[in-house]
Length: 209
Image (cartoon, rainbow, N blue to C red; front, side):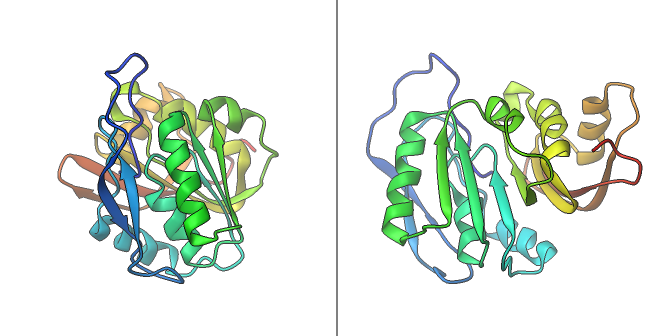
């Protein structure tokens, strides 16, 4: 999981890092970045990230990426390491966002932008068809996948890809998100790691722009 921000009102966590993430490919391969000690903040495992970037073709040269629920930044920094021209990270937790900014400075990652606030509100204001790759790993318990997919359908480029992590099989998640309407998403690849399911999606033909 890219990162799970705490619920509002959750017990304040200690300020020191309790773990680190390792970038597994590209410019900053093997570099370790600290992760703040926040409830339920966990990075996507190395093995799952390796699978994801195999799906995407390893290199992301020139692509524009959106890490919508950035958390630890594991996915967004991995994309930047692999040549993405722009990575926009959205994160609601101020402490997590501060850690992302510190990692950005440590790496000298000028192509990475970090914005603090509600990801759905930010996404609603983004220009249409502006991202090639979008990472969606919202907190499972908050049921944000459906609203997030509705937003990213507008900002995804026609040949773009969406990576999603969720707590149920991806096809079931998409059916639930559609709420009985026609599902506009095509599952290109999918997998599972423990209780977490992940998939790579594209908008099908006839999907709303």
